[in-house]
Length: 612
Ligand code: G6P
Image (cartoon, rainbow, N blue to C red):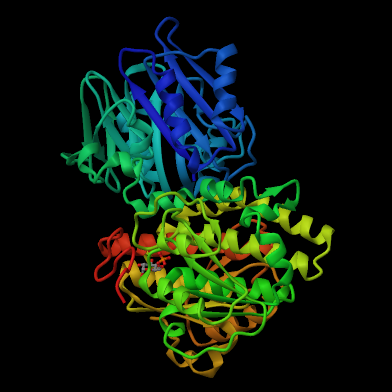
């Protein structure tokens, strides 16, 4: 996933392009680049750097590039390592400049032909073929840039959005969309293009979303959009204010998507001041926590919905460190007689801290002889926090999407901290604690890598839109993650989804598997991997279509048209449940978009259920 921005007007566009890139950094930041056409010398000025947009901004201080026409790009590498040579914009004959988001699948074949025609390739990217092809068509068609891009686009297969400009044509830039998002920003005597609205909000509030197959000719005073058949078409104008409060959504289409993308930041914030140089700080749970934690011999977790799933993951973590743990939904716990073993810590988990069942469970627990009560909660002023003896606040910020996302991953972080602290009292060595705490510090980056699968998952979602059921599989701590993935899909797409521990499949649900039952599975590199792969073979043997999210070090030994695998990079086992949650959230989101449901406020549900 990459981000592109383009601008044409009268003023120097470099600062606008740079700000746009900063706002698109969530889409990738292994390298960045800008090209401008400077009217003073009629030359293209290109500056590219490896690393974040800030590095590009600093380089531009020494090596200015200015112009009223320009393109810029922030990259997440697919073809070719992150390097200056592979960074966009790509040029052909110092005359055509191209920025690209997506993948050109037939680039190898095009490259061979272009090489035979005398073009020299200087990068390993798929994008460079677009620059040379455009140049080739431009030479053949007598200099019509729009026609050249149209001819080029007709030869490309894959998913892409493109921005193209030409040194010898200073009055236009061309934008094309086929599979990757692209929006036009409408200014006064100036126009912009970008991968999303958020990039352009500082300069305009008016937008036109390109549709699949559209090519736009963008000039200072006007723009014209052509559909895939070359007919000039009108696309509706959208205003930032009408997009349901763009300010609140920061330009994202839905709060849920915004909240999914906030996870690297809020997870880092939840860790802030609680883990330092590989050591956990006991005071995170309050000054009185230390002596109490020393006495804990078991943990009882109670919660609802997504928060309950967080508790289920914690059970694997706690028991793995030798701490007995039970987990229960609050509405069950509150009404049954339960047994409280000595020195048991009662833990509630809640985003809102106001869920009626969870609060009632806490009040019941206070009569049941627990060592003490701990709330893991996102709202400091909530009833749950006020009524609990100990608190660990998640710092997810306000979560508005009814389907919980960032609250869940920050709950998992909080529970990981709890597990390691209690583990310390149960013989976890200092070196092991340090190694596991360091894993936690890797989380923000690992989450960003998972988010970079955004567009690939968007395409994957198409296979679900017409389905009525889906099966989610996981083993060990990934089983609750499968449950959470199934819950997300149910909540917002209304597709019936069920989660199973993969090993349980053969005891019944395998009977449901056929080509109409998509099977989703998360595959971190852990001790259960080979077992899960065998379970997946059982699915394949019954004609089931597999959608797998795997650690990059995992060889699934599965291939064929009915197996789709996306890699999340190498993820340490101890944080895998947190990271592998993200693709399942994105999958549910994109399926819901395709189904046209109300993503942020799905039918029949509420964010905080304060009645029984
Ligand atoms: C509602 C929401 C869920 C949430 C559950 C528990 O059902 O729709 O998303 O997981 O409540 O809420 P809590 O605020 O206690 O985490």
